[in-house]
Image (cartoon, rainbow, N blue to C red; front, side, top):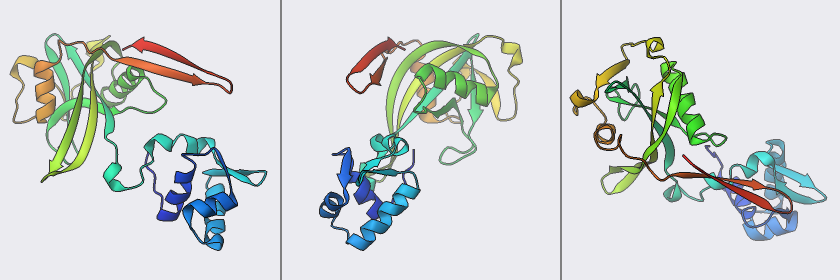
Length: 231
């Protein structure tokens, strides 16, 4: 979820990390934004569906509440992206896709996609494989979890948390190869033509089983419930 906040909106939003409801005077005191400018931005954020006004108090909208985990005050605190890598394996072969976008354009890779906030890991894996390979598969579990950083000099340029999961096709004949989507023998994978980390994971992690649990917190007005599930 991308937050394109200017500095004023960022200052205002940040105050609601510490309080559910705030009056105009409290926001004015905490942000030090001039009153006429603050009134303008509060009105805009209400119109944009980020804030709601009730009884002379402001609060985050339901839409904005979902943004809290993704909010960072500056670019140095950007979090890594969570990505599901889906290894579709059948008879010692793996289905790979050729990347069309930088920084890995032209290299073969494991099929992958972002984990969406409303999805479980299993749901994300089955959606990704359906969208990219038009395949109906059986989910086999998380093999490993890897944190990857792409460096430029001494600074991190990109960061990813990979969940490597495996699936197997329910009907392999329905999966049609294309120029950018092909089966490769696991024993004959080419390191030069693949993303290095994907090659390493396929060679070393497919026989693993990660102890990964999904936790679901069901929040209510009076209490909350937690559910754990091994994935």
